[in-house]
Length: 341
Image (cartoon, rainbow, N blue to C red; front, side, top):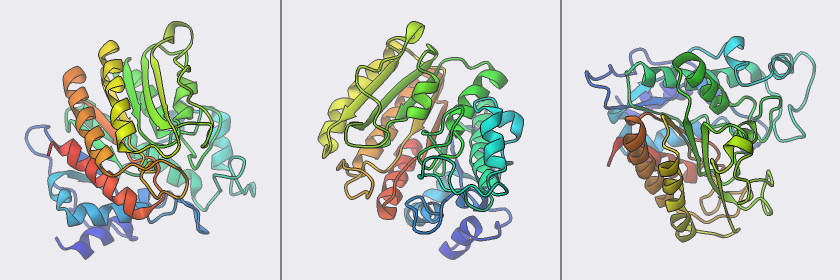
């Protein structure tokens, strides 16, 4: 398959029939969720989170030959109301569903604009994540990568920070409701603190949280202090590792062993990995100075953690990243790390 056919099938109006390869006999592969419905999640008028992000990643992964080594999933049903309200309030879902008709300009205080088809596009992101979760739990693959996903600022009752719905929160609740998976580890290396997940589960001892991010004193959303470690029965189950503005690979690699120690203390049954690319040097919205090597290292180690504690059951999510070349390099490195190179 040539470059033009592959990319037009995923980012254009149509889907190339038969593009997704058949699953191998053994579930030892990675599923990659990408396609036209996911490409529609983005904001226009020069917004940092545009609809070209998936294409930038796919160009790089294709150039590296990575698409030949994954099971491509280019269509999944959007999440339905009953799935969305496992994490979100019915009021939020109704607000998003009716936002266009109501003439709303933003879903929050100005970061997350309403765009045509916003509910459908956001529901497709959640639906793709649920599809990946179910494939893993049915034994069809060991791990998935959802490059358009990882919407970690949306909370149960609000959209925020470019995140309409939280695919992560819906997955956590669906793991519990559908499959009885209680203890979930959430690892986040996006430059921004994963506040939507942290505060939703701050008192939940079965959500094991580890987040390396830029210090909230210099970056949105202003949260994620090192002394925020969980409340009540969940005290100690949450790990926040803020890094000073300007920190680079050295600082990240110095912090990383604490993530592994945290999971050794609280072994999970399933791992979620939010691997935002906005910590790389040159991102227009943040101030860290990582190289793409950070994402390769983290993906390799998260895969090892999942293999050690939960039979390899792992979902990775693209998260943020607003320099297109940076996200292409970082996410492709995540895929390389998941594939075991």
